[in-house]
Amino acid sequence: MVKKKPLQGSDKVSVTFETPPRPDARSVALAGDFNRWDPAATPMKQRKDGCWSATLRLPRNREFGYRFVVDGQQWVTDDHADRTEPNEHGETNGIVVVR
Image (cartoon, rainbow, N blue to C red):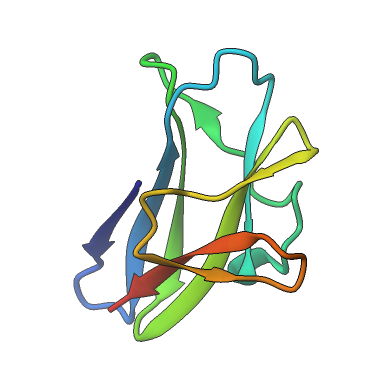
């Protein structure tokens, strides 16, 4: 799931990426266009409800591909992305549209 909140007086939007609880996961990270697809650049924090989340400030009027990376190895598509599109690895990226 993706939550967006425009930042008043800024050309950026606060975007919170969330993934449901993953009982067996030791770590979840966010990789995408915004961090050069680096699976270690944006670790997500596990909340008390078991969900994982990370918040970024992203520029308006852009779209970013992204995926969740579980335990540094399993790449997972967000089923609640604004939309999805195939990638060059034969899998699917989530797309967040920032307006």
